[in-house]
Amino acid sequence: MMAFIEQEANEKIEEIDAKAEEEFNIEKGRLVQQQRLKIMDYYERKEKQVELQKKIQSSNMLNQARLKVLKARDDHVCSMLEDAKKKMANISKDQSRYPKVIELLIAQGLCQLIENNVTLRCRAADKAIVEAAIPLAVASVKDKIKKETNVKLDTENFLPPNCAGGVELYTQKGKIKINNSMEARLEMMAELCLPQVRNSLFGPNPNRKFFD
Image 1: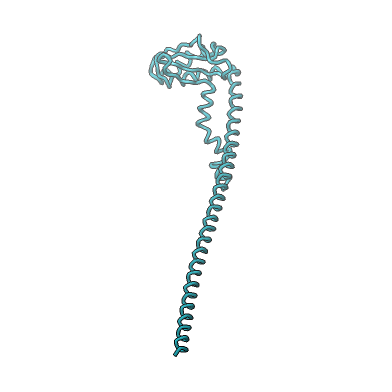
Image 2: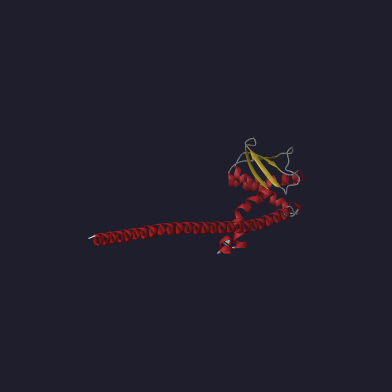
């Protein structure tokens, strides 16, 4: 009888040990899997961070390269404009062309203003040329503006002597101004023509062509 009880007790102990071992292995497996997932998630996030840093660095380098290309392009265009300004200064020295240029600049300004009384300013050196051009310019636009125009040259205030020439037109006691100086005309033409100049020098989209 005692042997039977002892055997049954041993079997019960073995059963409890087996169950405890099974539960231990299950819990150990669960914890290992949980830690494995945490480690995988950690390194996955690290990989994403590294990839993001690479993209940011690549984007920054690309933007810097683009800015260098754009600056080089704009520097080249500005250099061309500076050369144009220097050449433009020679126009006023050409006495066969400059008086006609002055006449056309005055006429254009009168067509823009369409006023009865207009005051002109020019360089002191151009005073005689402008005085001679005024009646010619007024006569050339008389039929266009359908108005009698009295044009007076300001002999007290002149354009800076170092400017390239041209005229400024004022009316309404100086409240309205048309700047037809040579520099102003060049700047206006540059603004209008700059997209075409860039296109002819660098293509329709030099930035895209360079980096694609």
